[in-house]
Amino acid sequence: MKRNKLSNLLMIITLSVFANGCDDLDYKPINQIDNETIGGSAELLSNLTMGTYSRLREREYMRNRHVSQEYPSDDIVLCKTTGDHLLYSYNYQHLVNSGISLNFWRQAYYGIYSANTVIEKIPDDASESLLQLKGENLFLRALMHFDLLRMFSRPFNQSPETNLGVVIKSTTEEPTPPSRSTVKETYDFIVGDLLRAAELMHVDKSAIFASKEAAWALLARVYLYMENYTEAEIYADKVIESGKYELLPTDQYRVYFTFLPENNRETIFAIKLREVENMGKTSIGSMYHGVGGWGEIFASKPFRDLIYKNENDARIHFIDPEYTLDGNGNRIPDPNEHAGYKVNIRDNQPKYFINKYTNEGGVQMLSSPVVIRLAELYLIKAEVCAKGGRGEEALQLVNIIRERAGLTGSQLFTMDHLQGYATVLDIVLDERRLELAWEGHRAFDCFRNGRGVDRSYVPAFAWAGPKRIILPEENSIVHLIPEEEITLNPNLIQNPL
Image (cartoon, rainbow, N blue to C red; front, top):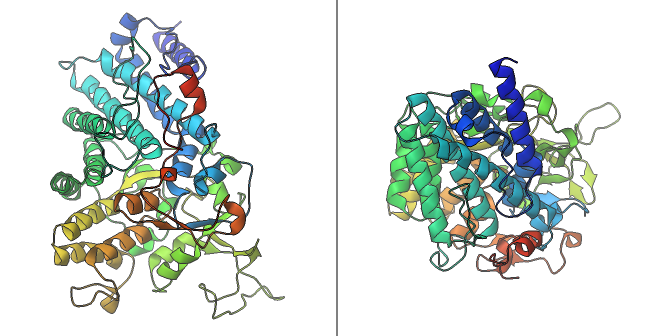
């Protein structure tokens, strides 16, 4: 058998074990390839790295990551009840046996184990190509810990030295069942991984792979969450000034998410799905659009109230209303509707579909979720400026984003023209809401800034209790640790119920 065929076979065996051979929190698969073989083969290390990337696009990781990050926001409305556990991320009624939480937790730690396998086998004096692989796995390990932290732990500004983060997995070996580190310890670990990853990566790769710039970009976000505004600005500037990325022009921006991520000049890192991996009605986009999907989640009224203030805002194109047509197939004017025409209703909710997660490359329901893109870096810096008393600079950065969205003249902000906002920070946070809608930021942006999420518009059927504002100090803003994992590992401590 030729070497490449042998390697591929071994890789298949290894990934199969990663997926099926883990019964406890260690997620330590039975290794079908001896350590000496792995450590001595650049080809196997490269294959294992591709296996780590593949973890991100597993449905249990990618979809559940999105559900946990976006469904608690006030930018969406679910038109009906459902037996899918996504409902409990949406309505903050978390379960100890949530399939969303359990599947995400396990997939994340499978991926972290895979990353650790490669990291451990590449010494610091290895060749540049191997150090690149080590850097990519450090980035992926940091990203997965960060995603776990956002799902299961409280914001950094809420007692990070005592509040519990997640289990830090820095090695494939764990002599005793591990316990949760603090929020601060977990954030510090993530920062360390990203700093080291940026040092090691020097190969210019497309946005479907980790890169030095992707590590810088994620560092900017992490530092912002940690309220380390000096470092957040430094790393945002590094990305902006790198010259590797550019904001798409307005006409292309309107169809941003139909471009392949490796060909999108604004995307810094995305989870790549090939057409053959399209998940159809189990994809992220299936809940957001009725053409090819279920179409059960729409743009919320509070978000529509904000975006339709400027009818020429290019970001309106990410909303796809299902219009009511007359007998001749024409739209029916309705001045009371946001879109200006009558929109079909489902379960008392107007059908304002969301198209950020469909039609990549013209294929229904195909989408490679964008993890981070250049526009966010401008807004990270804008938030830093707003909080540092540099209001004029913050508004200049906001206006860069608004001008790209096609807004001009009085639609832009100056210190003398705040358009009814009380503070510059209010403007920045609303601009983040408009620009990054349905990309998993909104709820966390509110909570980390000490603000509630107003869910009073949500239909009563979606709540076990009264409609209300979710406050950042409430227990329900984080998911519960999966009960099965606590049963397997008594060192795990559950989040407060």
